[in-house]
Amino acid sequence: MTARQKIWNFLDKNSTSIYVFTFCIIISALLIFVQEIKHTSEMLKTHTQGLVITGELERQIKLSEEKDEFIDFQSEILLKRREQLEKASGTLNQQELIIRQLIDYLKSIKHWPPRIEPVDPGTLARNRSEA
Image 1 (cartoon, rainbow, N blue to C red):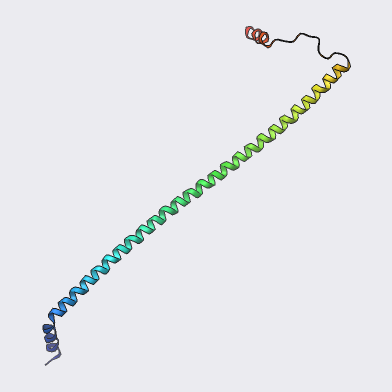
Image 2 (cartoon, one colour; image 1 turned 60 degrees about the horizontal axis):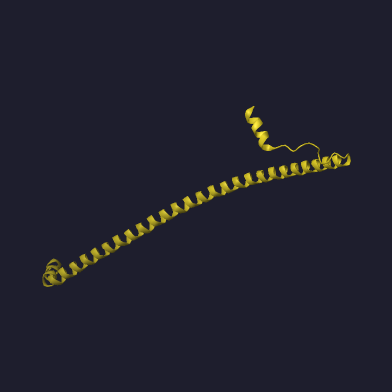
């Protein structure tokens, strides 16, 4: 008997086992293939979520930088306003000092309180509107 004949006899005797074995291998390969597809799908979802989160993080970082720039801008404006208020306060203090000195001088020459009639703001406004 040749080797070919021996192989053929073996296959013929065990054909049912060979078919069952082949069927099991095909089913196993299909199950592995389905599992791989599921795994790839999950990995794709994970990567997609990662990309969405990364995009959102970049957007939030950009927004945060814009907010920081705006806050710096507002700080500069507040600093300028504070300086203007300090200058105005200094000017008012100087005016108050000058007025006090003027009042003291008028008191010293006996012209305080003034001897003129007080001005009525209502008549002053009417006179201006008529002009």
